[in-house]
Image (cartoon, rainbow, N blue to C red; front, side, top):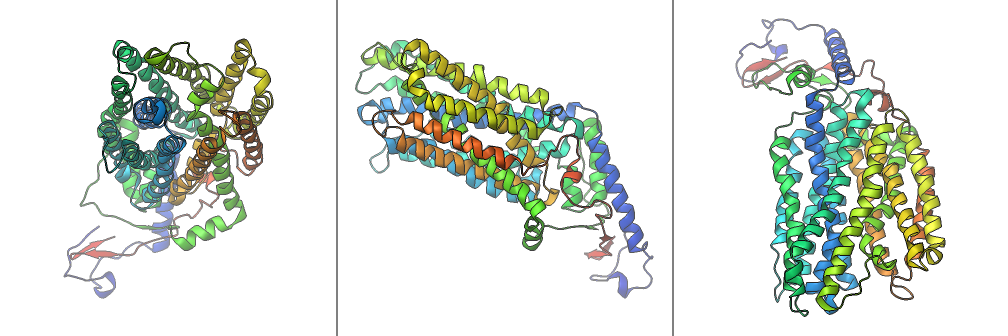
Length: 551
């Protein structure tokens, strides 16, 4: 209800204003309306809108994985063209591989916080713009006297990482807050599983461009290998295409009802949004509508410390953050160095000399990465999809960490025995694929899903960002350690010990998983560990703006 008044008039200064309902009655009504609206989302049937959420968020993760893991093959190409003796130095290889995880860490913290402050919708798409620009920038990078192309690529890959980092909390929270309780795990897993296809696409594109330029590479000057320069630019540059396709849909996705209710504290608008979104996928905000601002727990530094200062809440954040940290030690340690692993066990070895050897090596590495994707990564995601809402998140994560501990112990301590002959190395490849499988049918999926569920709405994105950033800290440590240690005692001689170190971190992940609650079949409000009865404990009496009373 609104009446026109003189400027700066308030309800208490003009007795002629109509009386408002008692504050407690209005608060109770809003509280009931909020819970009814949340129940409508939690019990909604799977619809085309949910398909749209999966597709729009999933394309982002496809792009993220493509851009992250394409450097695994592109680094070998860069070495042939710009590295001394046709290979990047340790520092150059480390720089182009570690720049993105560092940027991702920053982006996860920044965008995670911003999504809780200004809104999921307002930030969704911004991170994709950063990815598109930075990816295109890499593809057209040049070599100069003042700065080398490797230096330029490191800068662009850091900026791209910031955008990729923003995608983690935003996509996780948007998909979880729109999902029904019974299918939330599968919906979030379907979004995250796009990573596997992105990894596969990077290897496939590498194989295609290498094969397309086969004749030119074979006829290249062995000292310059000009056409390998074409290959890595196409490989990286094509990564921005799916992002461009998805950008419009990200910019037009509606705000989540939970953000509107619990952070903007506009229950009426959220209820209307739910009715529209669940029926036809549209939404409308009337700029002239009367707004009632509910009084509910509000995010602040003190409230954050009070909430997570309680052990029952703090242990959950500790569990999600450390589990992701431990997992990414191995996931990125292997994922960004699979070309090195394949070469170390003889898969990338070639009998050719000169440009023939260059072509064969690039071809074999591309095929090897395709095999690793198809045999381990992709099946792992989709087996998780099948079981996550029936078996539960916590059992899958525990099982994954246990299996990874066993597999890395076997690969590490049995490394020399498994790689004595070419026939035996096939068993190592099998175990390596099995490790990829149990990373994804295990903690790689659940460490993404659980932080999008277990925290209150006002901190859900921030806490997911903190958890994800902990993972990228693990990725950075793994990459630096891998680069510095792998040749200790001889070329690739320390790889077996790195695998043993991975086994230790997988073991610690088992214990951090025990700190996390099971989220299967529970609403986000149940998991927030906050009393929902009386969550709205009041309503703002009157706002007066430009002479208009807003109740």
